[in-house]
Length: 89
Image (cartoon, helix red, strand yellow):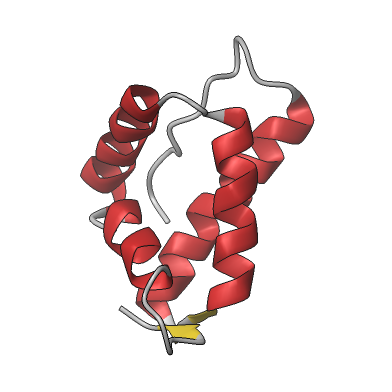
């Protein structure tokens, strides 16, 4: 990994930063090897507690995709499909 995660060090606590980084790493893992749907859904729910604004979420997702080439939007969308227990992009 040769890039920096988009995080808000000014407003987020250390715990919140760790939780957001965990979500981003699960997005990466979904592309690289796959993740359990439930793990991703829990991490995304925590992400939404930290980033409740849809516009801020879109901005962070866009920034993450620009640096990593992985789409959090598509991973989250895939996790919403019925009958899917494991997400591999």
